[in-house]
Length: 292
Image 1 (cartoon, one colour):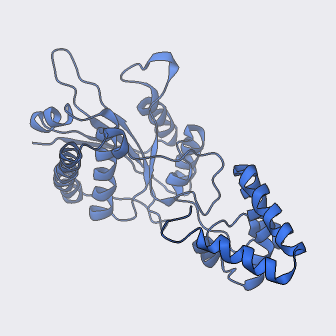
Image 2 (cartoon, rainbow, N blue to C red; image 1 turned 180 degrees about the vertical axis):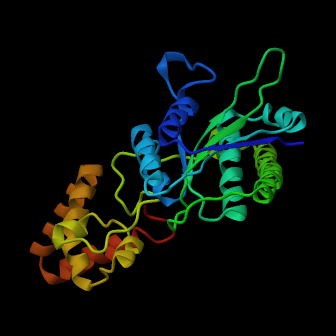
């Protein structure tokens, strides 16, 4: 049986200390590293594991409430599930537990927001038991105060067990299929984009800008979908972005760009019959093959 432990308190300061605990304590990590903090809810996901900002937001959520209820959960698995997790790569274990807790909160307590960290250590003569320490905000995403009854907590525990088993089976099927197809395991590892250098449209959990100001801002909207969501789908947008495309192409493959520029210049200076013949021969080169 899966075990879920739930406690609550009314101290914002204690909530800040608990964030530090789940990121650093319980099992000392080498080289001063800390566990990555993941967010539940749009506001906490947007913080991208910033411990100081998460603590500040948790304290701010408790202001204005007479008795803010900070719920702390420990989500664990049973012996059989721990043995199955031991056959997986730790990155897959983390991914499976993250999917499970996000589906659990979305299915049983929609609007609940907070922060959690994945722990994968065991004990003396005991198999490593992956588990999650989670701390939830005293407010739902809509601003209402949080109250979790015993019935709701029981529903969370049941949903947690079913979601973990479902996610675990999904990962095991993917790995088995990859082995049968002789696919490298590295190809299945979920890629996590770095935090730096992402625009708000590319960064998950961050609201879209209302509309970029000026032509320079539009150049940073690199995809058509991003421009459509931002509300800038005019023909002159592509005209303004064309110099940016050419500069990007020049930086990636300067030799190919120089060849194309020389060909266009030579064909523009040549007489019309020769120019038409050059462009016709250039088009024949692509017959029967795919040009990249």
